[in-house]
Length: 257
Image 1 (cartoon, helix red, strand yellow):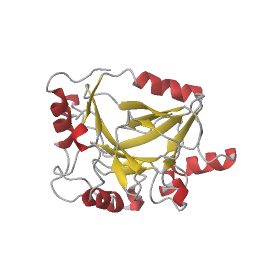
Image 2 (cartoon, rainbow, N blue to C red):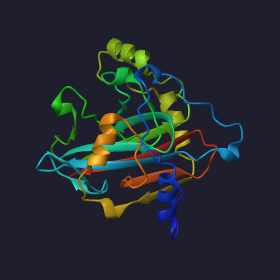
Image 3 (tube, rainbow, N blue to C red):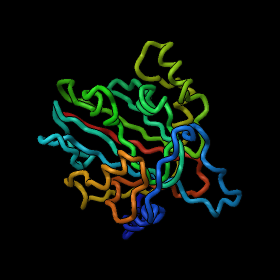
């Protein structure tokens, strides 16, 4: 994975932010969510490289989301949530590997938006969602005693991943398995691991850490509208170096003592 050089952090941030809408972008109608995004341009040079930004929020003592460093060490009882933003319309998948290495797909989820995973450019999405009917499912909580290491993998793809169920197929797969989430088979995960080899630029916007979620960010999440350029950038931004790469994979490890 390539890293940003001197001055590269600002370049990665600016390249990600510059495609944000300058006016309010309304949410895509529900009836259109299952449709594929517009066709990719035939000229590869006209493509933007795939970019994904995420911010990790912890629930503070007042119950409000506060930006925290993903590299910090968490404690038992801490509750966290991700807010994810892509720089273009795409398909988002989020996988979790627990301390034993067991994999599961935590987004899309059969309970929310009928298992849909098509996301719009620069519209922020919560994982897990505050729209979960059960308040206890609205945050990830560190409940297991002792040291815990959890890995999260965000997969952003220009087209749906083969053999990964979404929408009605996901709902049926979960129902048939009797599990709450879907478990990817080895052949699917092998393709994700191959996509991890793509060169990626990365930056951390540290000056935003410790800040509460702003009203503009909360409104964009609730109304599913695009964030404007003057709204704070995601805390961590990854950008493919290649404009023709069909997918971007971002991984991180969460540690609890």
